Amino acid sequence: MTLARRLACWVAAGALAAPLRADDQTYGDYVYPRPGAFTWLTRCPGDFVDFGKNTFQVRNMPYFMLVGGSTAYLLSQDPYIVDQAHALGSRWGIEPADNQKAVVSVPLPSSQFEIGVPYNKGSAFYFIGDGWTHLVLSAGFFTYGMARDNNRALQTSTEILEGILTSGTVVQGLKHLTGRQDPYMATEPGGKWQWFPNQTQYAQHVPAYDAYPSGHLTAATAVFTIVKQNYPEERWIAPAGYTLLGVLSFQMLNNGVHWASDYPLAIALGYGFGKVAVARGRRLATAEEKAAAGNKKSYDLHLYPGYVGDGTGLWVVWRWP
Image (tube, rainbow, N blue to C red; front, side, top):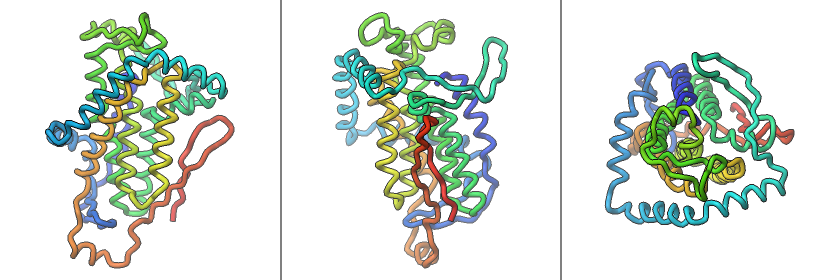
């Protein structure tokens, strides 16, 4: 996703701010305070600090080695993996091109800003990681939280925006630092790395510089982590989320926008910033707070995965209790 489009998502996210409330609510083992009007933005500086504290510790060395080692191995296999993804996509009839139909178009001084929706399988799979998909999901949690006076849903909505913003900032910085070519733009096997690229050239030819790491996979991992950790009782979220992340990862290879080695760091960043956002949006409940909650039904949000089989893509169907 381009920086301009990501910024547009962040600006649009301001409309999802919840009104200030002082009351806390206990759900399961955690207490969720009501998020403030701009919590999704004001918590970001602290998120960067907490991410650094939580990440750069000696006990995490095995994870650093895992990310580094898997990236190094995949670098040696990147051209082969992309070729095999193309072959598999062709065999399964999954379109490699990202074809979206514009539903909103806004003229800009030097370009055209558009919001599109997918209209074939390949585009739908790629759209899983699109910023607008995450924004709509955040809006859904916000709407439910306001309608049901549910702090957990409101915090989830806020944390989705927060996780996308913080992880996206780091990803964009790395992209502008490493300047790796997308597969379909590659002039050499594995794509050329153009460290510290000219930023004017970058803005004019983004696909020639923005492969590493994957912003789509980072954002999708952050959103999945946030929803999964806030709703541990919804057991379908884990298998559905891993499946969707896998489908997205495959399609980005199939349509030539990413190499497999762009993924390990993306997953680590999304997971890390997702965990930080969740941790800052809740706290462990005391025994007294759990007792005060009594027999009140805590888990009153039910999400069911659904698939529209006419080529419009994967959807999440919500049922309001």
